[in-house]
Image 1 (cartoon, rainbow, N blue to C red):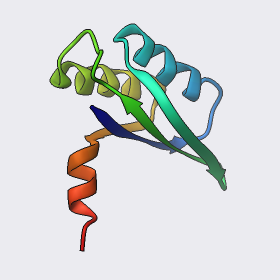
Image 2: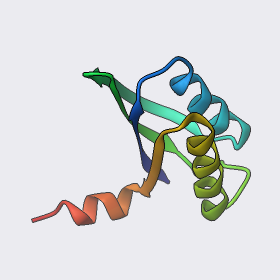
Image 3: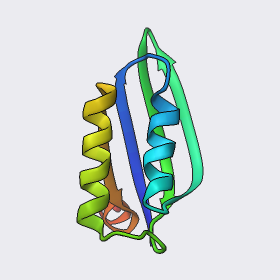
Image 4: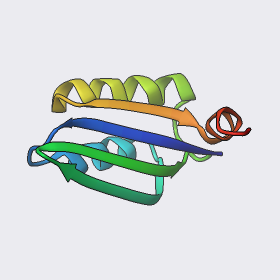
Length: 89
């Protein structure tokens, strides 16, 4: 099962590394990643595979919330099927 992760916040060193380490700890694989900085605002979108995660979805959300607080950014995750359903016309 795939999910979409969105990270937004003021740019600073270590955001990508922090998110990637947090995902590695719970065995979530990054399939694709896109990031940019717009006038000192960092934005990143990730497509991740959560089917082999060593924790349930609620714990993934909790781990990313905790890492977002540590980094001072907003990290949100949404299951791909929900994301797709929201964007169908």
